[in-house]
Amino acid sequence: MQKIDTYVEEQFADLPETEQVVALKEEIKDSMEEKAADFMLEGKAEEDAVNKAIVDFGNLAEIKREFQLQNAPQETSGKKKKQKEDMSTLNLGFSICGSGLIIALLVFVNMYYTPQEIWFVFPTFAILWWPVSMAFVWLKVRKRKVMQR
Amino acid sequence: MDSIILRLLMDGDKYGYQISKDIAAWTHEAFQIKEATLYAVFQRLERRELIESYQGEKSHGGKRKYYTITTLGKAYFHEAAKEWKEAKQLIDVFMEGV
Image (cartoon, rainbow over all chains, first blue to last red; front, top):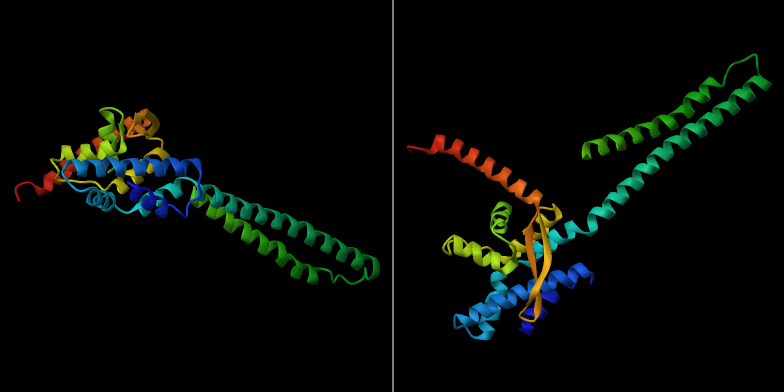
């Protein structure tokens, strides 16, 4: 039965030793051992029975995939996306405030030094590209979020 | 697959290996499920809260993990059974008399 133990531990070596993983491994080992015991009752030698139990059990990767789905990845991926979304909103706010300040400065310089000629609108058009591009990024992120729901 | 396991759990709480034996017995050994598949399905059903597990009494030197169907699981099974019957009827309409 030592062989079952080694085999399961090997297969699950890349998963962290959390309480759930240990419980899952125990369950699988118990099940394999019982299966091997049944084969021995049918008259198989222990070595034979253990091998057959392991082979018949099937691919453990299947269980691992479901297990990982259940635990870690959901949390981390959700967190990452949320972080990204927060950044896009912050970027939009910053670009609006920043461009507003620059435009205000231009208007002030224009009115204070050359009130006879209105030239501040030209650089204003150039500066407006900043908040506009940020707004599009923000809309894209929001649309993706709605579609995911 | 999910429905088969839910059906077997309707008859009472069971542990993993018992279910695989039950499936073989119900189908007169015609269908042998791989335990790996079975445990993967358990993980999935538990995640969807259709079944629950608890530690049972000791045997073979270890505690056995028993699975039990939840109310949600029962409702899900009845829904799945209804859908299956409807689908079966529909297919029968086209397959009969061939």
